Image 1: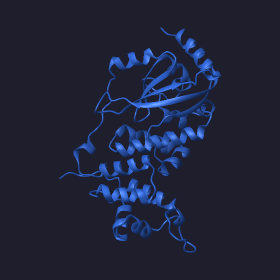
Image 2 (image 1 turned 90 degrees about the vertical axis):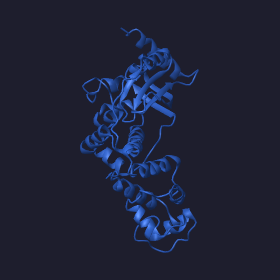
Image 3 (image 1 turned 90 degrees about the horizontal axis):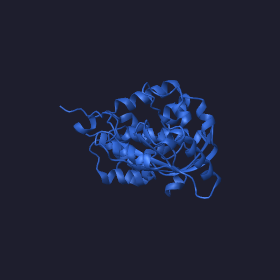
Image 4 (image 1 turned 180 degrees about the vertical axis):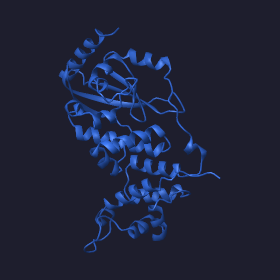
Length: 292
């Protein structure tokens, strides 16, 4: 008999936290005096979603297997989930199904040479490839130079491979490197939380989360918040030890090179005509002189 993944704790914590963040006024209900707990009551969510209180209570306790997409949509709308949070809820539901696919182990794959050729062809942009656990698995020369503090960190694994989450939470040097360490830590944790929703059976991911939770109180607090994020572009501000302050635009792109492992290609560039572009070009020249 197939056993479904037991992710009831994740479902319970996620839904309860999102319910607690909403006020009656936000969903069009009248305020009704003092409340014992913050946010909406379960029965209020149930009414707004069009289900019974007993049914919603069961859902919030983690019994999500077999719930229809229509009902999940109704709950997502009622809790005012954003697109990333909605995706996470559906990923949790999918993982709870008694399907062999949810238990299939993911294995690390070797990137084909064409990926490295692509990275190397980008000489004025920093480009790197990460997996869903935020391991940096390939870079061009400029990305290696740009993220030198991460590559030089004591948190790299035995193969010299950095991991963004381990760097931010286990290396104090990350506070000097990131202009907004708190924001970087928030995003890093939210990316890992979304990945855990997609691939809850990933042993390496569970081990990483366990390590960070054990060692870092900052990570534990953020992990418990159940914030999720799917890769989006944005602005990253860094203090590079060689190039100085840098404001870079970044854009992640899905890189479908394997069905067994999820990869993302992220490109970092500077706005044309700015001092950031000048500093990035200097860093590119510096990196080129150090190629073997």
